[in-house]
Length: 442
Ligand SMILES: [Zn+2]
Image (tube, rainbow, N blue to C red; front, side, top):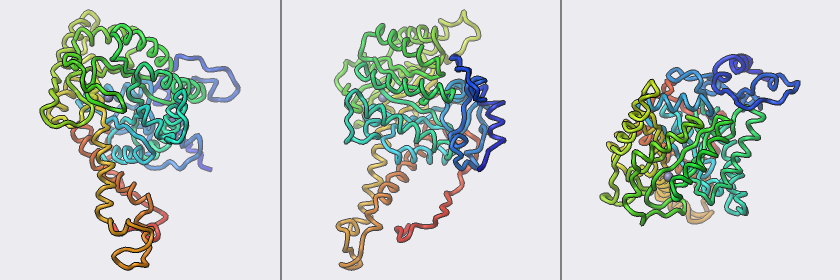
């Protein structure tokens, strides 16, 4: 049995301990860990999983010491987001619906030497649990997201990349979903000294702004006890996503006002600095034909100037006090995306483009092997030839993954989120089992 002694010693003495200061007293007990403040422990250590190369890293050459492989929360997460803001890049936040889509994200993050945000929508979380499972009281959406969280936690360590584990839009009627996830995080925190999820989005943009802020404040209070971050939405992201249709909202609602952004910033700051704002600057969910989307990234820089002016009394003045989130970026010009990043966008959501890339991978696979995919037996090489190796679902799913990894390469490039960790190129994957017997020609 491997003890990973150097890692354990580091975990007890350095970055992990400073990564997060718990505000909740740990119960007294005779176990060594409970005598001190709760400490983050790798799942690999906890379960004695193999953990070599990137997995064994305590930190990354180019990032603050608190940032480590695996899921981040608390100060480590804030250090990463501040690093993004100061260095002018945004982290891709990809909606995932299966272990396959999560693995594509982790592979892409390592290939790009970069951090990533993995997020589940309520519908994506429900799908993760299986559409055959009853979702009464959001049971499937809660358990599906928790199941996905454990997948991300285990494998992000193995891929050796830092991950922020997040959930996407949560409208008012969906609050019981986030309540369920928060309960899970609170239980997890008692045992591990960190929450199960890094952050959640609460989207009350359809409610009056006062109610939006009040409810967000009460959640942020609960979040801040565990070092979790809140993403809130202000104004409306146009278009349609995950069953929410904002295709016909009045035009002025698609653009947030600096006064509103300041009001949110001021109120939430009273509780914690661990929040981000998804402000509206003409962004639209989904991809539409050119000319239908008028992005106004300057709204963000005007808001930053307005707020830093208001904060002048409280030195030192941060010229970009707000961490913005960019929803509905699919189909946007790279110049607009990069302009928004220069104004303090540190996270951009990616859903539509990877939905397409995943499907396109399967489409290309089917095109290439069409004649081998029409029955279990019989193809152009002979009427009695078996087709098992073509219709094995691993083949078309892997095609979906590799096509998605390529699309994500483009996202990382557009968001200037490459070569951030300082690990250099990823080694090509070694498969000790060798090529699968009868695998497809490459
Ligand atoms: Zn969104």
